Each structure stands twice: as C-alpha cells, then as structure tokens.
Length: 581
Image (tube, rainbow, N blue to C red; front, side, top):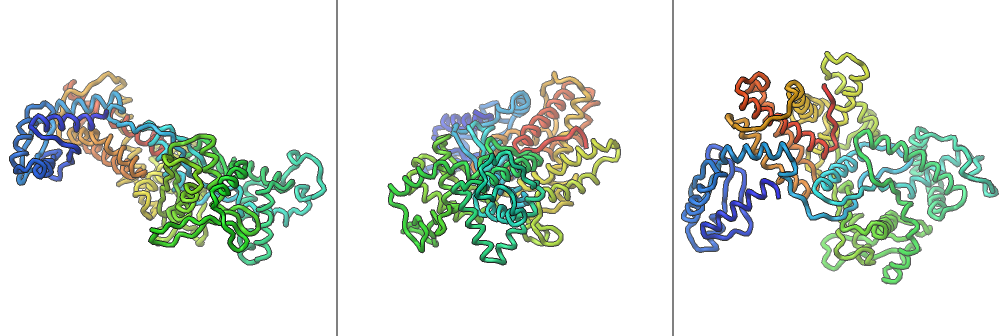
C-alpha cells in the first residue's frame, strides 16, 4: 500500500473514532494553501447520512485528527471544510521512504495479462508522423502498466497482408517483369533468388503505385488480384512478399528504436492467417455470414444504436479478406496463443468505428469470453502551426525520420558551446531531439489534437523535455560532486522543501490516474512540476556549501529523491537522459 493510500486509511479510522463511517474519503489538495495543504470535505456527505450539522461533524473529526502526529495543524472553516497541514516528521518520512524505495509510494494494480497493440506500421511504406503517436503513447502505457504490476505483452501488428502489398508487388512486376518470382514455370528454390530492391526503393515504390491506382481502375483491380494471390499463398508472389517483409521489417525496427520504442512481438496480419479455417468455422456455426452483392458480411448493428453501425465485410467479392477480418483473425490468434484478460488497441481515434465493428463481431462469434476486455484507446492528431496534420514544407506527408531530423537541427543549435567533441554533440543532440518529440507528444491528453512547435518544444525554458532533462542532470551533478550517498533527511526548514515533499506524496495518485485514463499527460505535468519545485529549491539554497551538516544532508536527500524520481518517471515515458547538455 502506498504512503498516500495508507494516509487515507488512517484518516478513515480517525473519522471512525469520531463516530462516523466513510466509504469513500473526500480528501483533496487545498485551493487555499494559507489555510491548509489538504482539505477534507466528508462532513457534508456525513451530515446527510447522520442528520447532523456539518460544522458539528467537522469539529468532532478535527478533535480526533489533532491527536495524531501526522498533522501539524487542523482547522475547520464554515460551512464544514476541514483543513490539514502535515507535520514535518510526516513529510520527512515521505522524503526518506520514497528516496530509499520509490515503490513505497506506488499502488500496484490487480495483475492481468494484457496484450497491447500499438505501432501499426505498414510494411514497405515509410513510417510517418502519424505512426509516432501510436508507438509513443503505446510504449508509455506499456511501461506504466508493467510498472504497476501487469503481465503485459506488446505487439507491433504490422500491416503486411493488405492491398498496399499488392500495389507494391504489382509495381515491382511492372519494373522487373523478368524476375523468376513472376515465372509460372519456375521450379527452383525461391529463397535463393536475389531481389534488386532496397528499403529506400520500397519507400519510393509504394507512393508511385498508390498514385497509379488512384488514376487507373485497371491498375487498382490488378493490385487487388495480387493481394488475393498473397492471401492464398500463390507460389512466386508469396515468396517475393516474404523477401519484401524481411527488408522492410528491419528498417521499421530501427526507426522505432530511434524513438525508444520496441515490441515483444513484431507480428503482422499474416501471422494470424493460419487460423482462417477455424475462424470460418466459428462464424458459420454462429450463422453470422450473409451474402451482399457477392461479398460476405456480418451484421453488427444493435437495436439501441443511436448512430449508423454498418456491417463488417468479412470476405470481399473478389474472395480477398478485409481489414475487419484480419483483425478478427488476430484476436483469435491472441486468444489461442496468449489467452489474455484484456487486449488494448492504441490507434488514431478516427478508427473508433472500425474497432467497434470488429469488437462486436468478435463478441457475436464468441471468440473471446465475456471477461476478456477489448479496449480501444484512441488518440488525436499531431498538427502544425496551421492547425492541420503536420506536413512537409511542400505539403506532403512528413516521415518520422524527417521529423527527427528537423528537431535534431534545433537541439544541436541549442547545445552548450563548451561541448566541443563533435561525436558527443551529435549524440546529445540526438537524445534531446527524441526526448523533445516524445515529451511534447505525451504532454496533451491523448485524445486531444495538439500543435507541434519545434522551437517551443526544444526550448530550455517552460514545459519541455530539455528543461526536465537539464534539471535531472543538475541533480546528478550535485550528487556526483559530493560523492557520498549516506545521507538522510532530518529537517524541513523551508516552504520549497515542503512543496517538494507534498508533490512526492501525490505520486501514487498520479500513476493510478494515468493508468485509468490510459494517458501519460498527468505524468508529464507531474514531472514538470517536480522539476520546477526543485529548481526553486536549488536557487534558494547553496546545497553543496551548506555548513550545517544535518541541513546539508537533508538537502542532499531531497536532491537524490528528485534525481531518482525523475529517472523513474522518464523511464516510463521512454525518455533517455544524456550525461550533459
């Protein structure tokens, strides 16, 4: 149990000793720090239950609270608010306990086996800025859920079996018609054939093929036919597809790792295809399939729907699988291979209807049991200063690599001139660029669209990653200069110390709320506030040169606490700390 939750438990018992029972404690941070640091509002609720005056109830509770050493001051304000100020000894314990063990102020969640689906990159296409949010938010939620005790499994869920691959292979066939992969009479070993294609080529081929498909129905139909070849493992085409996957997947891994994102599994849509016969049997046994203009559909609408709910297309008229079907297959695969308690999807919020359709179809087919929670975790768009989705200067889709390079240019310019080694400068600028991108992306509530401003987000001032990293480096530098970690907090002699201790007390609440919301913005806000409070404390006190040894040790304990907490929280956010900047 966290320090905060233990505090709530003790206050409940104190209220009980005053003669009242409270189910859910109404303890909140005070809006009036001149009156108290926290506020109890339970007297109003208890007044209705016990038919007594809230002021009289508040006074009785106050009398009991004053007997406990946790509190320095307890006061009652009309019409029944109870204001609390914590004792120095309580806050000193908070500082020492959390500095020694951060988990002493963390509440673990009920352990569940959770599969989290994020990333969603399409093979043979460049990762663009839209992929940033899914990967970044997803990795943060993964890290947080794991920290809070879940058995969590991550899957990139690569788009590797749909029409984009059909388009790519068609364009390769047009450019290299003599490749043996397209020779119907070839009887050799496809795995030994060379493919004169690099990932850079693939990144050019798909946009070219996509434009042709938009301009020519004939080209598009041929791509559909090839997609069908892939899904039915037609020799030659299927072996070519596997080589394309190998080339592209390696580049996707490298790009994700640049933003400190990784997955337990790099499964694609194709990995679930082995369960197709089983899924077909399931939907047929449940009488879910209906004919519709040559296609097979599943009706998922409900009588109480207040908005249109189209059926899912299970099999298209050309006998190829739809995205809805491959997502159903993936859920079946996950059920068979992992048997999870929950599956979370971190996806652009504009895909909500698609996932609602898929979840309904899965439930109608009884693919997972009723206890398995399928959760859609939608996010907004990252926009430019024009409030439109972030683009290149010429209006094209900005690749993730291009975004990283743009931010890198800004962070490189801002480095301390005293750093003269070029390789070191490049490494630090790279770490800062990734940190700036990740922190700014997580700072807003995940469903909110936000404006990405490179100059603002790479600044050393304000709510930015560089500001937090600089604070963390500063704390580490102080500790390194002292060279001794045998210190303990014994005194609180300033408001800034109290404010830090109070912020540390909130840690468990912040992590729990972030977990419930599946959003990292509260953690981003929390670590910024923590860093700001430490910088105020640093400006007010000469930590290293303090003459009074007990005060100096208290200052160093606080410095160590800030460093440890920042590192802990930055790890959840997936942000690396450079040695200097």
